[in-house]
Image (cartoon, rainbow, N blue to C red; front, side):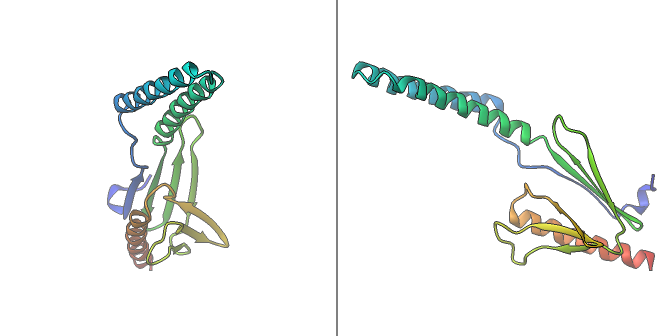
Length: 159
């Protein structure tokens, strides 16, 4: 383990959090209520086959809320020292994935100015790793700038 003074960058990246569970539940209840009104109207008019589809709509919305809440728990931990750049990626219910690079050989690629589809890519020895994919393009570009400055410092420290 490296000494605390040798760490040039220690950043944990997380996606933006979803709405609180109580608010998501209220939204789901409001959608269910509106769908129930539509179902009652259409059943009264004789179009009863619409009912299962309106129920499926609510179930799928609930599933999407749950999936977004779980996805918001992922994170990437980037640590840069003069001798090593490490990236750890944690997903809920999946094993930890980790990569290490020599900071001297790492090249950072990011569009400037950033666009929606811009990616932050680490290149080393012909291989690449995309990081911070869940961040907004402007946040990704700011982090890329901080990482470039820290890498420059790491290269100067070694040299």
